[in-house]
Length: 406
Image (tube, rainbow, N blue to C red; front, side, top):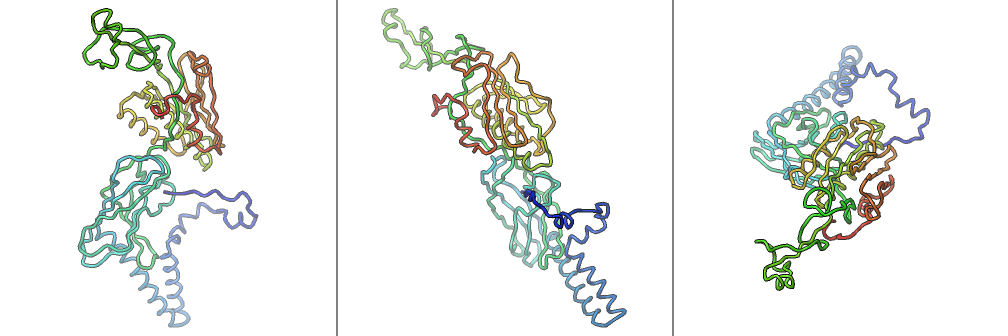
């Protein structure tokens, strides 16, 4: 994956002078010098001029440099065209910082070993960054088809590959790199990292009800009443005292608090798109959102999510959870513009926002809130230096039923 290092804030005037591009319009005329073969070609031209006008030794230098260039360009071109490569991962989706295995299938069609093959561009998140090898092979045996397994750990969410991966080779001299697009590539989705949230989010109704806001009937929770026995009821829920009095099977009915539908709004703005710190702030915000939504899913709380300007429904089944994680993974690393998010609403609403400094603010507006719910409006601030694993574990003050909800 492409990595951007922050430049030092203290640069001398000499450093700025040596690293400033004063003529960007002329770059296209000198891009060929990025490859070492360009310098070899320039040296060959100078050697030819020396041989013509000064000394015959120039012809010897020109011949030697030409031989090196021909060998250094011919073999890489042959290597990438006589092999057929396919790249796939053993899973189609994985979370950030979770290792997985990639399998590179290579077929060598010539009776000679092929050295120095590499695959570039599979885990590069930004297409504008310079591609870096994801897999490198020392040698492929002649006339064979081989599978090579490599353990890879992605560090940033997204749908990969962003650009078409390429098989490359610069063996033996490294003066020129031959490239060819991979024809068989299996895509991979990297979901945001999820941190466990201990406890249950305290957003509940006020009245008893089978549907909607209130308490739902069930086999656990507070005592609600009694009812006649139904087929399928467990014997441990039979109220034997009431059954003996009525001469019929009576079952104790219990009910837990019925969760209301929650609206979660995630701010997807990246305030400084070119800033690495702002990108990391957005990444932290997305990880917080993924952790909260996963906790709500485990608590079986119906959720409606708005990612920027996109609205999605989040239910209890695994398919909806996967769709939600895919949507979070599709948020661009540079963010996407969205309308200003307002907390005020008659509905139960949660807003996850942040700043370019890396702080994440979780705001909860619960019109039904009381003492148990923590008040009508709650604000939880996660600092840029806070470790998300610890901060998310202590996100909710209520930690009852930890073993069930965590």
